[in-house]
Amino acid sequence: MVWIPGGEFTMGTDSEIGWAEEKPAHRVRVAPFWIDETDVTNAQFRAFVEATNYVTTAEKPVDVAEILRQSPPGTPPPPPEKLVPGSLVFHPTAKPPKDLRDFSQWWTWTSGANWRHPEGPASSIDGRENHPVVHVSWDDAVAYATWAGKRLPTEAEWEFAARGGLDNKPYVWGDDTPSDTNIIHANIWQGDFPTKNTGKDGYVGPSPVRAFPPNGYGLYDMSGNVWQWCGDWYQVDLYRQRATQKVTLNPQGPEKSFDPRQPFSPLRVQKGGSFLCNDSYCSRYRPSARHGCTPDTGMSHIGFRCARSADPSEKSTQ
Image (cartoon, rainbow, N blue to C red; front, side, top):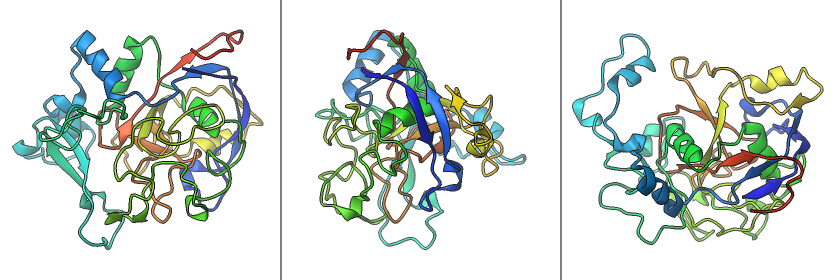
């Protein structure tokens, strides 16, 4: 883990490239803490599973009652073939979609997809021990963190750590957009999303941890590669409420989630973007970007890292 000294910073953004839920920028102070140097890897997650016999959400039959609870009244139950264990896997589209808001064009429910089989039953993590574990739900991430004697970072901790000491910058490495420089900073989508990833950064899917330069705090993959779960509930208008305060001290997140676009679904915060984020599509590999996802969801671009509270007298890496 890496020691993060804590301090005051500008959270969120006022930039025109930011999404509504990232605005407005506001001042936040976080206490010192520890955070994992990298995302939790397949090898680390395997050690947890072997020690505990833990079964992830994606490896269990789909909970029909939970689906209906998160759906509008009168929604029919899913067909039986959709109730077997599995997860959502990304597939490029054959041609540019007419509507980029229709995620179903590139996400496919895949029976047998889980952390052991990232692309489905015929795939494996052999040779990918140092890749971030994916297809992990928020519940899975919390279970691992608890076993490891850690916790998930708060959204504020995560963003403070991601910025690496660069306050109010659009990217974890500074001001240059990925298209402004030939320097490869992160594993993101190059080319036309979602049809063609040129792989200019060397990868068209998740990359091993430490494949790209660390940020100012020595943390890897705080931009791109895979989304990372945070401990907080997701509230779409949270920043507008915080902006009424001069400084928000060590926020732990709202008491419950709120997003009018998903009124029946409780949502947890994800940060960091993934290998699917593109300059022209969502650019959510920026540190201020945030996303809400149901706690029981795992996908082929969702992972996590852990944090731990610490005494301010601690000032070394462990």
